[in-house]
Image (cartoon, rainbow, N blue to C red):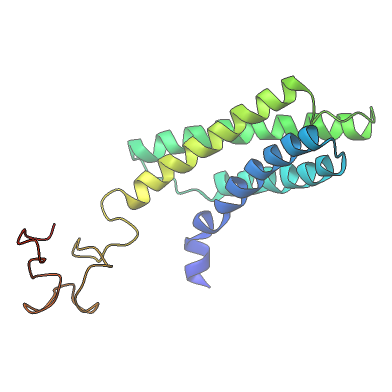
Length: 171
């Protein structure tokens, strides 16, 4: 349970990335295919994605690191934009009985939101995967390279340490 509490941000962050992008995609599809039901799916994704954004910002680590500060700033900007878009869209949907998902102004703002959530995710990914890629061992060697997975070094006779048939050393 302690592991979950320490890593809540990393659990929540994927919700807004997926849901907010799909909300925009569903609205574009609704316009292109002239299917109003796709707007309903877009609203649902928008609400869930916005709640995920709030949870992601709320659970983000508060460490005095310039990289985290920039990521947190863009996360908060993204959150505020999507809270406003969600509130306006729901208000128009319930009070005015109007669908805003096909209006150019809404689509432009949602596209800016998609760019923001993408850039914020990129900044977060840079912090997590910059020094060691997701497919690297702790010693910095690629995990998919030949050799045993236990200690990160390949035996002298393994394909990872031998020259290919061309005679040039392997990269």
